[in-house]
Length: 552
Image (tube, rainbow, N blue to C red; front, side, top):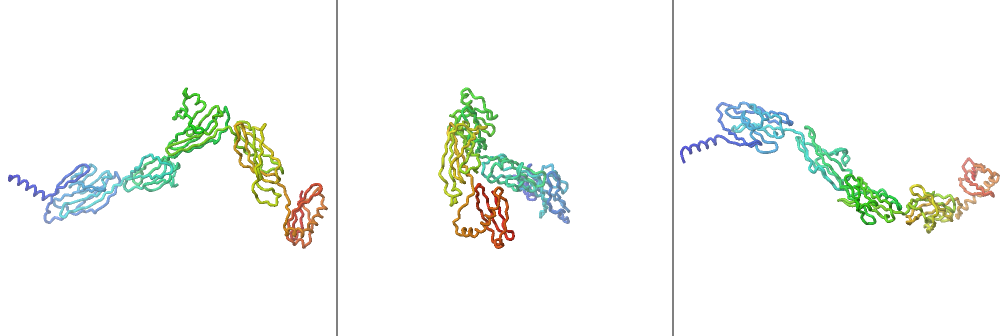
């Protein structure tokens, strides 16, 4: 090897051993510098930092000064400022002496101070003021940059949830200081009844239609304006059907509309059947919900039978009804979550009668039963079934017993009263009933298409009269015997009373011994030749004598 080349290599090795070469990585590139150790001259003091370690907190956009003030810098040592990012990463060189190394125009070095203008979150970290002395001398400052929160929903902005399931909404937020997340619901309270709820999650249990809406997660840390993210919740559910009528009574030549209101999400598909057979669809403009003009091939059938949908209302129209159109029509709705149907019976039979007479009869052995019904055609016959519900009041055994057998009364109808809306009013008088007896009755009527269903059970009774029940008790007989003198006294008083005008109140004095007796109520009937009756109530009250009340 040549002597000059060996000499050059030896010189580089010596210089390398006397100086330290370092490289620092920054977002904008890699920067190198050389620190050389200088032996301080005798008699010079070591450098000393005048500042103490500090933490500087600023908001985004503000400026901050990082002080590295020193006393007795001495010799040829140069101040080095380095930075360690707040969230980790490699150490970065900022400046050497008065030379800024990092290519960031917002950072300037003035002597031993570093100024950062318009601070940003990425400026946060630990700044190290450093002298490469022996031993090294360092001062550490921390920069905390506060900034307004940001937030994002951890899920799609629109979520479709089946009814009855559970759902958890999640949001994540960033900011300095750490933001607080609160949940709210646009236009109302949360399902829990609260206006807001804190946390990064919101769980909805057993969701239903009342939980639909826009849910907001809002992050706030006191810096700048709060940030929000929104999620829309749509609840999907099986079809629900509401029919306006269960039975439609009509007749030949009439026009009829059968309607069902259908709700569901996604919107259900609706079809009609009659007696189990599907009916053909009418061509429809589903956007405008208006039927299109039928084609010539379907004109005859569709004129007689058409289907129309307006919003949630599905209508089947039957024009010029014939007897063949009678039957069970079923509105069937189906979507991805299930199927539901509603049956509408179209018939010519009469409606079950509704009894309109009073349940309390005014005659002892007769009762007039009246009722109303609806029928498109005249009523041709009726059938009354009735029976006793318990024994009459004159029986000694007044406890309730098993009901009696049904009695049937059937009559053809020659004429009847018909009011508006094809309402028919009828009546019939039942003969040979028992006095003061409770009965129950049901009524059916018939037209040209057949019998109606039975009416609801109707309870009525014949006229109830007062009866005197004989007593078989020996104690009661003994009590009556002891009152015989009192009864004779009452009869004498009545004998002197004019019957054409029975007084309402009569008084008679009793002996003192009678006054002391306990009051004994007595009810009896006195009948004169004229058929008049008098009810006598007697009683004894101490010190007041006896009062006689008579009434017709």
